[in-house]
Image 1 (cartoon, one colour):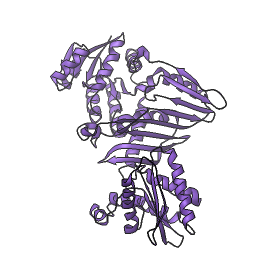
Image 2 (cartoon, rainbow, N blue to C red):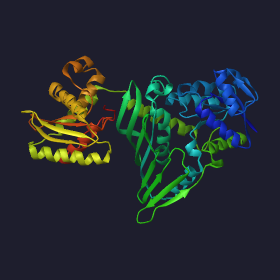
Image 3 (cartoon, rainbow, N blue to C red):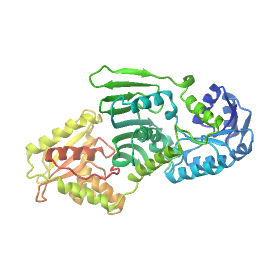
Image 4 (tube, rainbow, N blue to C red):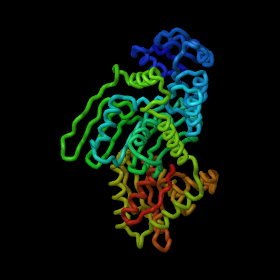
Amino acid sequence: MVRWGILGAGRIAARFAVSVELEENCELYAISGRNEEKLNAFREKHPCEKIYLSHEEMLKDENVDAVYIAVPHHMHKEWAMKAMQAKKAVLCEKPAGISEDEVWEMVRCAKENDVLFMEALKSRTEPAYIQLKKELKEGLIGEITNVKTQFCYSFPREYYGMTYLTQPEAGGGLLDVGVYCLSWPDDLFEGAMKVESICGNVYNGIDIYLDAKLKYANGTAEIITGLDRSLPTDGWITGTLGEVYLPSMHRPQSYTVKLKGKEPYTVNVPYRNGNDFCSETAHFVSLLEAGKKESDLVPFAASVRLARQLDTIRKAFTDYTEADLKMLELQEEILRYETFDNEDARTLGNLIADLDKEYDLGVAIRITREEDGLVMFQYVTKDKKARNLDYAEMKHKAVTEWGHSSAWAYLALKTGVKTEQEAKEKGVLPAGGAFPIRTKDGTLQATLMVSGLHEGKDHEIILRALTQILGEDVPVPAKVIG
């Protein structure tokens, strides 16, 4: 019988407690926290022998065999290491640490103290995940080429800044649910991950929304995470012979296989004991009873790799340099027309309107001739309002006042080349969506404005349209452009 101590008494701790109650060789022995009233309420729902108002005191209890770390992300390393130093087996809620350095410290601590340590990445322990991974390795859909996962939920605005989820040190959707999204491509592809591009909304260092395109040695991936909207937690795995669709990629219990030229079919593999935590709990207990110090399903190397990938992506939306500005300037130099007339404006505007169907967000498009202010093209989807065109005109100011795209204006403020005061005085809205249309001799013929896609996708759709029309490729900074 494994006697569990849960460090923390929040929502995740309660869900884990249920799995302990469902497993025959487990017992919830103790719970620790700072609020006695909250701990007593927890014990009423999940009976246990001991409650501790001090985490340290619980770790001193020799009757505790294993500890589940259920405190906020930035506290994982401290308490996981203290538990391991107290010779307790540790199952640590994801992410194991908030950086690769932290995870390395935790792994070293586990080895030094000769105790079992595992990141609670429960998706990898689900029966459906294990079965699907085996089938994929056997060539179910041929060679895997792309993985796309998404996990977004709507976090109440009134709580922004009040919890760790919305604080710079450990907050954001990426650290909270992005681990699940990254876990699939990390497990299915090889080699180091590189960030190809990111669209997102980063506020005060917190990633409210991210859409990151990634590249591995033998495939590509896209992950979508966020705290500002609710989206289905879908996953798609594409191969040379077909595709697998997962309606719940972070805790799967079914998947649909769509092979080329064949009827789709669905495979159902339910949770152990009908609970999405039970497989993880049972797996950890089996390791502990076998005297093992590391999981084969969530090995140390996997936790380190995931932390490294999270670091890489986070750096892409916090670390701006003047080289990024130069890259945007190069985009403007490459994407120039021989001549630009009304027919060119119509072709460009219609293409963007057509590309917008892939985004499913709605868009406002305006192309203005700079010679006389004539609107050469305008299109607004029914969900957009006049303010979207007002925003577009404020982005337009970046082109007329600073001579570059409004995406350039965004990075100019981030790198200190321009100041917020300058932007305010000029009426510039520093957010992607306005692009100078120049001819080969450098003359500014018109300004293309797009508003409504958000998260830097306004700039992205502009680049997609112009590169398609002009037959050119341009470098793209692998960083968030607001």
